[in-house]
Image (spheres, rainbow, N blue to C red):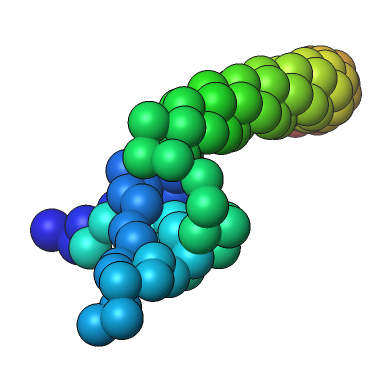
Amino acid sequence: MEERKELIPLANAHVRQDTNADGTKTPWEVQENVTNDLLAVLPRDISDSYIFKILSFARKFELLAFNIGMRHMQEELTGNWEIEKENLLSVIKGLEIANSKLAEKLGDLIGEEEE
């Protein structure tokens, strides 16, 4: 089974900051788990505790935006399904009418031959 691509990258992201040999710190990197793809670079002077607050904040609003998008897509699809359903019901009704007319004509023709 193929592993599903993560739909919300920040949900499983991590932050990383290295310390150089001279003691200076590199900028913070926000990376996707598994792939380590770079999602963002933040300033080096952000404290450890504050960087996790920032990541938590970003995750919260990414999830909210994702859920809003999913609801919007569901509403769009539901509206389109209703339109498609009405179109198909109209076609079925037309076919039922045509079928009744055809049965009536066949009945007339068969009835004429028997007499």
